[in-house]
Length: 115
Image (cartoon, rainbow, N blue to C red; front, side, top):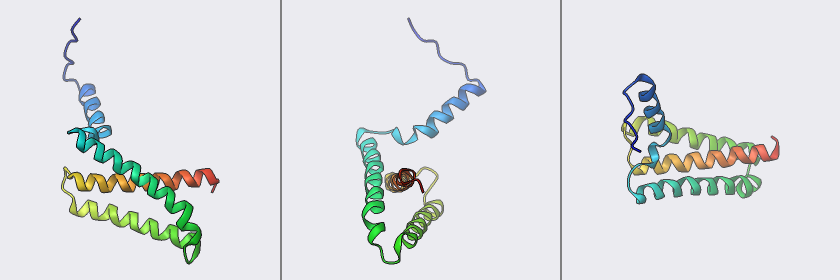
């Protein structure tokens, strides 16, 4: 049983764009995919360590540490918007995944604490 090719409808093109948007980082060789996934996991690990260890011992307390982390994340977003090409290289994707993992860990920790 062979599968017939899909027609080039607007809905099919929208599905293809959605799949490229959601799974865009999962293209390429296994080295590329594993590097991207490792960056995401290392970002999560680093973000969870920041919330557990550094926020409690940071001079100025938790509010200053959170503001500094927010400024760092926003600076990375602004730099990427100005410097990265439309198809970013592996370095930019790794940096994005580190940032996304760290932000996810901080948000998850905030939900666990109920604050």
